Length: 402
Image 1 (tube, rainbow, N blue to C red):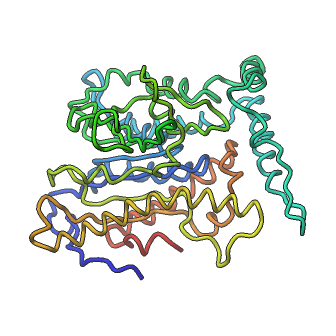
Image 2 (image 1 turned 60 degrees about the vertical axis):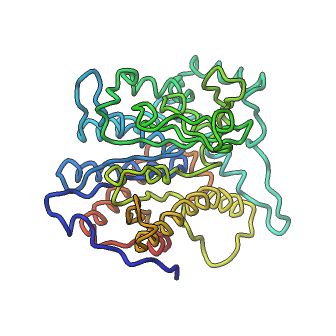
Image 3 (image 1 turned 45 degrees about the vertical axis):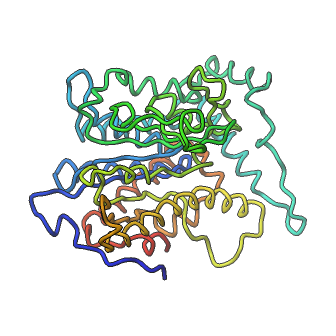
């Protein structure tokens, strides 16, 4: 059992007229993030009803996509305010179009997913798998470029395989966002490849509420940088190197990005590094896609090893940030250390154990509509039950496991 500090009553219990400020963090996990779509749909319903205030969103990889859609739907643009209804509509419309829709896309998804699944099959006793896809195609190679060039003529939408084009289509007024009027902060995690910078694309940099920091180039914060939010940054957050080239964002010589899973999944501590207590969330909710626990024994097959390796990669960096928040909570009870600090309640929303146990690394690449809808529906069911009980629900770290 991890020792936690005593916690004051929630703001909802203390002050009936002042809503609890909540930030929601969305882990990445490929198509498993359809679960987050269902959870966020229900959260937006409660925000619309005034149950709490959504002051922050965070995401990495597929979690970055869902967080962006909610944020964009809420953001005022050209003087027109956003809304929870628009955010929910946009989120679900985006995800329905992110899956395979055309016959050609369905066939491509079947081939891709089944190939990943076939790679997980192992010859008993020998411990040998057939490397059918991973590492076969290099996105910088001629063969990969030729295949990608043929896909549109076969009936595969460019938005299906080009994340940048997909984001432009669903966020056409991004450059018209009224940054000074945005109420919900968005943090997106990515990994700069060459120098190894842990990178956060932050909407508050756009609003000039926090200054930009470009790692060792302009600051003493050598291996961490905070940059303006951009659609290219969100696309960079979802760039798996086996499928897409490293994303180049600016004219800087060293500015290439891969998936944020390699650095943080997702970023959360930036919500609490500011001095003003009123700008910090009261609660941080983690939509956990990667199970904290997996069975009772170490994985032995190649498939289970790869699956667990990916889950650990997606959890350990996040847990370090969350554990730091717990330490700050302890400091809040020390008069000398408590200045400008605020006790934050961290909570976890997660899939049922049965669903989490049944999912594998290969299913993160299953872009079929049926699979997406099943996970989204479970996300809604879990969130409905969880939100009915909130704030009398579990707290991190006890609620992170099964």
